[in-house]
Amino acid sequence: MNEQPHLAMATVIWVAASALSVLVLAAVEYRSGRQELFERAGSTETLLAEKLAQHDAHLSALGAIVRMSPAEPSPSIQGLSENILVRYPRIVEIATFRLDAGAARIFRYGKPAGATEESGRPLAELPKLSNVGDIASRALPGEQAYDIFKLVEPGRVLRLRIDANALLDGERASRDYSTTLTLNDETLAAHGGTERALLAATTRIAMTSHTQPLQLEISRYFGFGELVPLRLAVPLIIGWAAVIWLVASYRETQAERRRHEARAALLKQEAMLAHAGRVNALGEMASGIAHELAQPVTAMLSQSQAARRALAIGRQDILEKALDANIREAKRAGDILGRMRAYISGAPADIKMVPLDEAITEAMRLVEADIKARAISLNMVIFPDLPVVPIDVVSFQQVIHNLVRNAADAVARCPSPLITLTARREGDGVAIEVADNGPGIETGSLHRIFEPFFTTKPDGMGLGLPLSSRLIERMNGSLEAHNNGGATFVIRLPLGEPA
Ligand code: ADP
Image (spheres, rainbow, N blue to C red):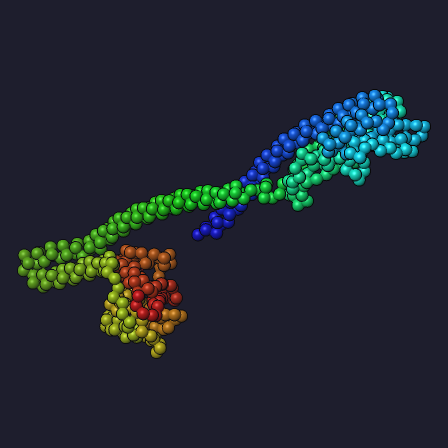
């Protein structure tokens, strides 16, 4: 009954739980990726720091040789330079500057071809170095390299040119990582990384070298597949579906059990009520029977006593009267018991398809004599198109008999007593009406006349109408009463085949 809302609710919970799990999974993956990034940045920094320290060491060693070589080009400088350039490919050039007034001579060392000299270079090319031993670094825009200058002695400057890309050689290029090296906001080298990443984590490290204040920036990129690995996400989502299904089935079983228990409790209660009803009805019936039988039995007793006295005094006529009265009373008692049995009996109706007009004519034949004897007029209005109806003929006659007899009782004291019986088609069935011009049903009794033992007659039993109503119900029809001048009783019966 509530299948749809339950399914929708389970789906919502499943989607929410899966989304939450995926988010948690992504957060965990992101955290571990960031950790990996920090580790990688740490080792890159260590390697880089070592290389920068090597540059400082080369500057010191070369500076010492330069100081010892007053004349240039110097074969000693060339020898050491050649050695350095071969062993450290990231150092791409070694040069010295001799400063004259306003211009400089420049000697390039280390190439196998030997040292070269170039004069007349403007001093503006050099950074400002005040004291001997001062060192300064400068990026070479667009060349992915930087220079380190050192004032070796007054008027003599040493320069190392470093290939920034080669400096990052240890960094393996990958789509997941990007590494950028800057010097005084000039980008020296940048590689790796991807544009299509979903998320990125970045760490920036300022190298502690005061001679080469480089900045290292390393980013780690996360694609969707990396943040939400399918090998974990799919089992999680399926797992949630299984868990929710299990919980839902468990709850459904519990609910079913509760419904079952409630139904059982209800049935038990109904059974108890029915039993109480039966006990009640039985009590009522027993007191009704006792009440009804008391009258004829008392009459029989007094008549029998009278008969005895008549016999003693030899009065044949009184004896005969008393015996007649006894027979009458015994018949009445038998009649009461017979109707009682009919009312109680649960025997199924014997329903057959019968032409309605025939059934009515037959029923009326049984009461006509009585009506005539009581000087009551009878008006029969039988419409011509009456169909065949499914009825239990005997029960039907009994009902008509009860209704006509009641009507006859009602009109007994009327100046021009009249009973009208009408039979016609009505809606999907037929309606048979028994109306009289008597005083009508007493006000306030209309709702009680179908109760067993309800009667307003001194010798009534109050079983005629409840029995009639029950018999008509067994034919799938209904019996109702209303006041309409006199009283009118309407029997409604359906058409169709017997069930
Ligand atoms: P009984 O005839 O033994 O009283 P019924 O069940 O047949 O039992 O009727 C119950 C009561 O319904 C009657 O006592 C009477 O008060 C009322 N009743 C039945 N038919 C009529 C009628 N045609 N006119 C007025 N009252 C009626």
